[in-house]
Amino acid sequence: MEQADRTKVLGVSRNVFFLGWVSFLTDVSSEMIFNVLPLFLSNVLGVGTAFIGLIEGLGDSAATILKIVSGWFSDRMGKRKGLTTAGYALSTLSKPFLYIASAGWAVLVIRFIERSGKGIRDSPRDALLADSTASNAMGRSFGFHRALDTFGAVVGIAGAIAIVFLIQEREQLLSSNTFKMLVIIGTIPAVLSVLLLIFFVHERRTSRPKRAEMGALATWRGFDLRFKLFLGIIVVFTLGKSTDAFMVLRAQDIGLSVFYILLLLVLFNLVYASISFPSGILSDRLGRKRVIVAGWSIYALTYLGFALAGAWWHLILLFALYGVYFGLAEGVTRAFVADLVPVERRGMAYGLYHGAVGFALLPASVIAGVLWQAISPAATFYFGAGMAAAAMLGFALLIRE
Image (cartoon, rainbow, N blue to C red; front, top):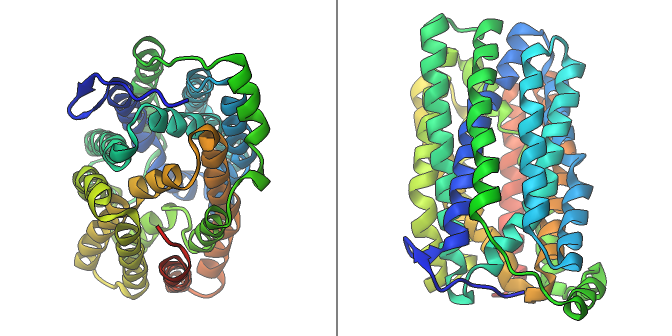
């Protein structure tokens, strides 16, 4: 299904370019709304941290089967765009319902539907990105996509900051009216992203015999030991990587208001976006493994820092370091998946990769919430740092490039 486009825009294919902007608009929407969702649950609805962890973890984990199925189905049908579009559309349709949510269970249902859309779209979208890229430029393409995705987060959070400041200035707790305005405005770019995907992203359908061959190959037994070991290590890493909601709550626990927490999230995303593209290019030249190991090491140190943090200025450094981790590892890890498997198995491979992450997120977030409530906020981050360090060592010693 290799269909790398010779037409280049900013050094990447046309599809990669427009898929980047689709993710940009989606993240403008999602980051404007969902970064403050744990504060809405805690400050407005009075939901405890264990239930917040359940909401965030269940939303991702319940969509895991969809990620695996949609990846396999996109291989079987020889088409990626339809499933990608359906996933983005479902997430977009769910967001306005947060305006009327008045209980934790309602938010859980809405978040489940929104994350299900992500489950449908992620695997075929990443496979479409890989299919639209030459093998020697995989890091560049995924780095470009991650950079635009994250610059969208910067714009979304900046918009949230403006709305929060205009409605409630620097009040520490989030108000219901503020959250409702964020939902209204945040839905608009989500709608635009779906329209951009429909009209500007294209693909070539594979022949019927080739689709049958790809469907037969797309099974767990069709992957080699190296890919399976990689997935196991990803599960270990993700068990310590709880929802980012706990970093937001940690910042509020130290004493920051909603306004300043959003400023820290802007910093995180600016660092993430700035590093993603050059990190992808660097991985094309030096290899993915070195870049991923560096990123995971920084993650472990960052979580250790969150455990020990006690002042607002600590958080500035830690949110910046968290952006360094994401910029180094997120896009490069997805490019590494494409390196590990044959072209015709990419949809299923990305389904299994996203599935491994999704299955691990529910226990990770629940464990984090329980540790927070039963022991201390620091315990949540000590656990995450330990799991990340173990995964990093396993990756460095067991996975060859």
